[in-house]
Length: 65
Image 1 (cartoon, rainbow, N blue to C red):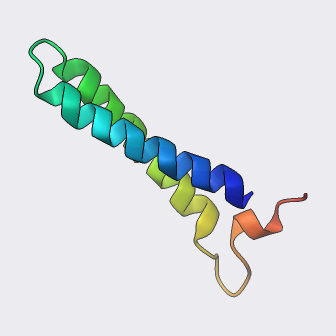
Image 2 (image 1 turned 90 degrees about the vertical axis):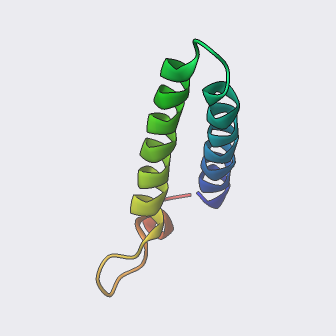
């Protein structure tokens, strides 16, 4: 599960960098905004899976191998 979270974080970083690059190009702002929305969704999913709930472990730690 840790490798999946790592891939998600790397994807979010790449999408963020791409959105910054597209923001400066004329006519691509809509794509840049959609990429930033996707970065927010990925970040929320990573946070949900990695933050522990109450006294128990994080949901990612409970996933079966």
